[in-house]
Figure (cartoon, rainbow, N blue to C red):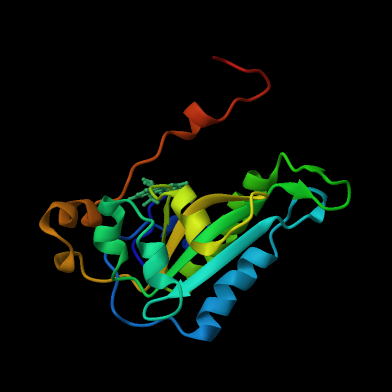
Length: 192
Ligand SMILES: Cc1cc2nc3c(=O)[nH]c(=O)nc-3n(C[C@H](O)[C@H](O)[C@H](O)COP(=O)(O)O)c2cc1C
């Protein structure tokens, strides 16, 4: 696992997580893949609707090139080395009452957060991407309207920054900063 980023005692799998662009050619096994998806499965959700859906593709397997082709070129440039791509979707309809699920994307985010913690704890790296063409992916895979196409998740074993195109190498070695807790948290009253 990478160096922890927080100076406080948060869980190592939270503190060490980062979004890699360099991926090793080492494949992710079916069991490893199942484990990270299982972590997502146990996330909490509004009315226990579990609105998250994942379309999983593996390098060399069905649908992988199709999904890769939906990424923005700046993402495709490095994501094509990773062994797994997952299209993360949120089902917008509450089945029990046939109404709009206003928390579907929130709940997908919680599930993906758990997936990320599990992946990091196993030494895997994952990188979420909003930079893809949802309309193209919807058409390519025949995905119905009631599913929102939210991100593509790149999953694999972190690789060597030196293997990236030069303009990305420095970025890979750095870690992105965070706002101070004092900017994010309001105690007792809201201070604009
Ligand atoms: C919803 C979402 C969309 C993102 N889209 C992209 C993207 O298109 N390309 C990219 O390189 N990184 C993308 N990222 C990664 C973020 O840039 C990254 O999480 C952020 O800079 C914090 O860095 P860290 O994950 O290494 O801590 C995305 C992350 C999220 C959660």
